Amino acid sequence: MQKGLSWAVMAFCGLFLVGCGADETASETQNTAQKTSYPTETVTLVVPFSAGGGTDILARHMAKNLSDVWSVPVIVKNVTGASGRVAENYVMTRPADGYTLYLNNSSFATVPPILTPDTPKVDGFTALGSLAKSASLLIVPADSTFTSIEALLTDSNDLFVGTCGLGTPQHWAVKRLKRHEATTHVPYGGCSDALLDVVRGELSAGIVTKASATPMIESGKVRALAITSAESRDPAIVPSDIWLNDGPNLDQWYAVFIHEKAPEAIKETISDTLMNVFNTPQFEAELAPLSLTPYLHNGTDFDGALKAEQAAFIESAKHNSK
Image 1: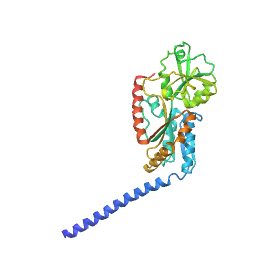
Image 2: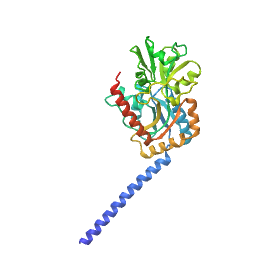
Image 3: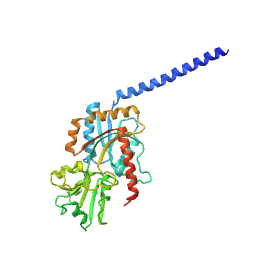
Image 4: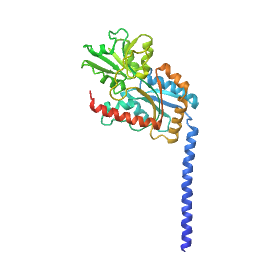
């Protein structure tokens, strides 16, 4: 009787283990199928800022490259508002199937500490990798009387400074101007909108990405007085003045995110594709005319840098609430 029971238990365990193995095999097969088949339909790349800005321009280059590799349409969808919060809510309401990607910039880390200090980090997303970065420029209209950042900072008149939006790195740059109280921050829905009002002379100055401002500088419609990064300085674009060296770095990175509940196999496929497609001399050559520099990190590496940056801006916000 005991022997018969033992054989029965062994038989049951054997069946159970085979069943478990079958489940694991099925899961692995499904992951492999997802990796090899993705994508089979249109991929949407959501951008949280208006058309014509640095993020949008990069998104359109990115979409073309991915479409060529994947042989499916990759469309750019601009969803503006609240410096990215509207776009993030939009992505969260889409199916978590891997067919909605989110291209944002440093605003992903810099906006929440200012706009939503009680929830100072964006949740619900997985970083797939970073692609590029851009410095920011302090610009003035072509006919402005300001010829240097020193002249701007010491002028006693009211100063209206436009930026790419509330909480963006450019907003943080306004905070660090250390100018007298007669300074009004004017946030826009993207760098391109702020840039146009500087061109029109409706703003005293603007702080926008180098990627956005360079065409207008080259055409003589605005002038640059200073830049946030020494490594991005181009004497033909901006003079030698470099400012904003205190506090977290304000160079603006661009990275791709996805709904955290998207299939892991698809996340891996997209991350690998980003690194393979954009880690090339061809893509670097595409970035140069856009005044962008490569900043390529896979999802894991970039996630570590992102967490450190989020912590730095949260801490900075506690000491600079203006």
